[in-house]
Image (cartoon, rainbow, N blue to C red; front, side, top):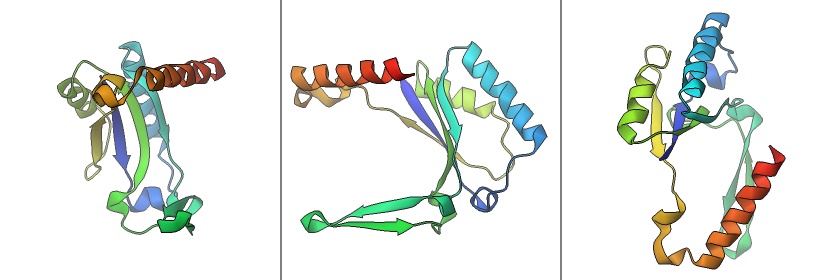
Length: 140
């Protein structure tokens, strides 16, 4: 099972405040544990929303671009991991070990797998998905 672990933004991350050397070292040690255990597939921090944009899709094919920053920091993302674990419970146990500070909030969401889509995900669509994943893997 794959899970996306979503680190929620706060006032500091939105202000572009970078982590301390101590936090970077602690997070590096934690990431090393995740990699050695075969759990971590990817993980990155995100720039503040002031450097981002949103695209709103409307009827008639209209696209509206909204430049950041965005308000309501409790709904924004500051970073993420992609983990491969056996269960949600295992993901939770790993996350409990993360070196976050009081008040930080992190969300865990399971990633859809091909088999989750049932008959709607036809053999042709599955083959297309596999081709795309193979092409992505070649680029890395």
